[in-house]
Length: 510
Ligand code: KIV
Ligand code: ZN
Image (cartoon, rainbow, N blue to C red; front, side, top):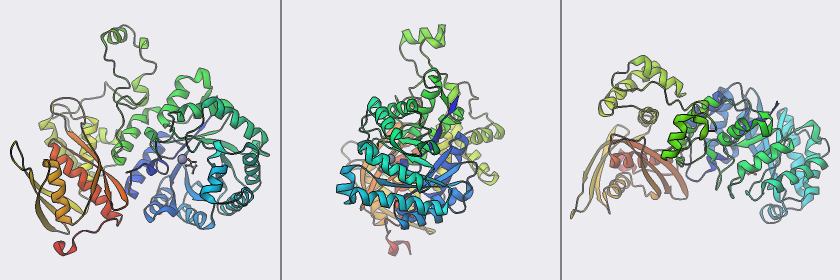
């Protein structure tokens, strides 16, 4: 079977999702898991975009092995130099440079004539090629570009040394048949196309990203660009797990395979959701909570008689192991340690003892400690590395009472405390935090859900907060939903603080 390469851009295009801001440690954790998942290329970030992006790419290139690490750069010398600096210690670096080729982008965004764009593209690829052997060129908004002009640009960048040509559907406008016809027309007119790999990168604005990518497979492209859980700009990118499972389940149709270790799909999806704070919709294909759930009596009856009546793929294929050992208060160190390792969480011995004590405390309150609970224990551990911590929280609320919160936070070894009233207890608690720190966060999104079923489930709160012009996400977990809200908000505060987006009241801290 022909092997198709998977180019994962969760850490670049995915990280461009509104409200997502990962730090270098979180990016490294995801990169390691993506390597276990078996992606061929891992786009680690856009180094010129920020110091944080640069650092994330640098650390991934330096520390992650057995995968090609790519960095994005506009078609400009400054971007390419910066991408190279971030990638230079990598094992198999790829510079990914791009410029838009559609009339609408060239005219309004770039304000350049087509021949100027052609020249910039060629210069960019030449410069990138002087740094690395592996150079990807993307024609942004390719699917709305003129076929002849695009083929000309691609022919010239091949001469300049490009090894991979990406023909994206940047705005998610294409339809599958149209995109396939377009790709055939462009590839048929590109001189030297047989010497390079062809890639596609589809956005999901019309919900067609996966369908368009699969249509491209039929045309014979070599690489699919995608993100875990389909996260990314606007409606996101083609979802990696959907592409991989469609190619596998319908290999009779597509006749290609990938190097993806399917058993790692669930773990990767959970990790990305947890660290980005982007929840997965329950009915999301492959990784949604309900993707393998059978509710109606007729379906359950069919499943009990013969699974294939309603199940086209086995959940165990993607690492959703329903029969796995149940962890609870009688579980020992070995079983708990092993489960952390299976979840791709690198826990060293010194951290493990503390995690295990927390596990025991939680197991006393819950019949079964689930995968999501284990992640929550690690979240609490990560909170210890935050600069601002919750020390205590006191709430007074009820009918005919003005909800009031008193919050104590620890910063620089000092306790900072204040109280505030609000529309409800959560509002009061978040206002109290802002009062303590002198910050002004605008809550854009707030969601609360039980992380696993059952009356003893922990509550998980996900928030998106705007500080000035910057949006940042946070996630908090606790058996107390107000505490979970406070922890989620504080995670957002810590992230914004770590990136220098907010200042806190120094006079109180000193
Ligand atoms: O959507 C797009 O066109 C991109 C390019 C930079 C590849 O993300
Ligand atoms: Zn994109």
